[in-house]
Image (tube, rainbow, N blue to C red; front, side, top):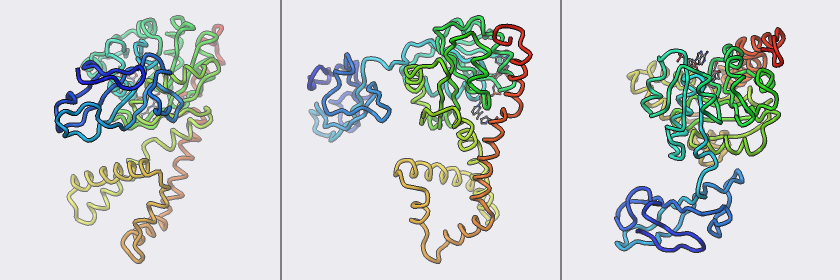
Length: 367
Ligand SMILES: NC(=O)C1=CN([C@@H]2O[C@H](COP(=O)(O)OP(=O)(O)OC[C@H]3O[C@@H](n4cnc5c(N)ncnc54)[C@H](OP(=O)(O)O)[C@@H]3O)[C@@H](O)[C@H]2O)C=CC1
Ligand SMILES: O=C(O)[C@@H]1CCC=N1
């Protein structure tokens, strides 16, 4: 038993402690304070920016420090459970996105691997899921039947066929989350039973390292609490935002792969100037990472940071002049625009095929 009674209804117990006990010096501890109800939260702890009250991080003085060697601990307070804990989760499709999201949600420690099930036709991608302890199967129907929240994580052109296959297993209790680029909520809803709860999510690959940028939109039957559950579940994957569906394609264009090209070009510039390739790529990666963190953590506008590093007559402004001369700004904006437009048209035929399927419909939902 480490703790002592905090104010209000809180108490610490050894079960609530992650990491070393507070009476073991020289290491920061994270204390998880469990509140019985949201209203039990410690006075002074404010709600997080999303208005949720289930995970709040504050700084506090160490409450128990017999050795006197710890000055501060980071105290993480949460209600008894995240709302997403224990929700059975399924993935139809086991590729990069399914893997990235699975990794993220398991990292939270709130969802256990036994609560997750993944399907794919081949075993090519199931091995790594299995290594994480996730249930694997070749049956999409089995995933849907055993889950409440189902991620649809197949390539866009496969969405109609997969929806056709799983539609009869989707009930009003299910929450279907499509990550397929360019496939609209309306299309997914049209291919599922009436009143199906559908959300559309656009993640990106850095979910793999818990630094994704994710935007979701709610379908016509999805209520705010469905959005809250998804947000809660995905929080460990990175930044999770909600917005109208009309922003999803723009997000796809913005957060997609363009930045890798920029990193590659930076590295190749280094190589051109005589740097070994491997070193140049390591430095480019770190440069992109550092810039991203500085932008996010400082909250500064990029133009401000750019101005901060420009010595008059110095190297940076000479480099920036070349970028402007090459039209990098216009080209980048144009890239986001082009990717967005393709997404709006249906991400490389995925949506077109979905629409055809609905138009050709053979049943109530065009199946
Ligand atoms: N990659 C990215 O950066 C992003 C991707 N997306 C979207 O995520 C979705 C998945 O992309 P991604 O993970 O990259 O794709 P992958 O090609 O990596 O994975 C696709 C998965 O779907 C499986 N699959 C194929 N056919 C079926 C079927 N009939 N039933 C069930 N599973 C099937 C594949 O099986 P098998 O393992 O047997 O090959 C594979 O596991 C796409 O719709 C894409 O638009 C969204 C944002 C970013
Ligand atoms: O280009 C693609 O198809 C994927 C979808 C979203 C990001 N990349």
